Image 1 (spheres, rainbow, N blue to C red):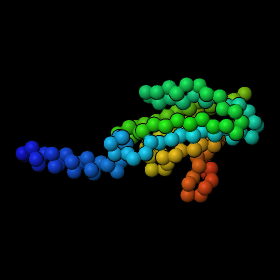
Image 2: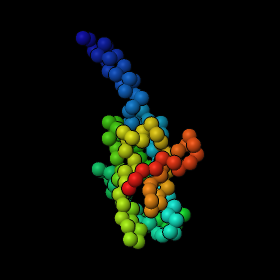
Image 3: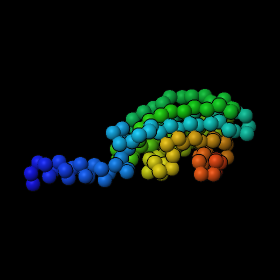
Image 4: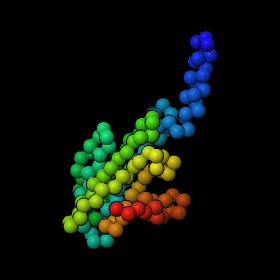
Length: 134
């Protein structure tokens, strides 16, 4: 196969992958995760978020406050951010971003954290109704 055909095939393959590729070459938007402290108990919440490559540090979120971060999911859609949430008397962990789960669900992923559950804002219903168990 000559080099022009090989180059053409490579270009076609890259274009076919474009729909699921998360590299900055293909993705127009960064992903933003926002974590809101919506605890009914009005408690400070300490959060520490990590990915395989990044530790975002410890942050204290007051009642009604929020903490956010931006990133670009990787090319293979294996990006995962896990957060540990602590408040007096409790410690919980949750995946606030899992590319396989969230890539088609949100580029602006806003979480309402309550002692009962984490709930993702659903743009289709304008509600925090995408809730999971701890």
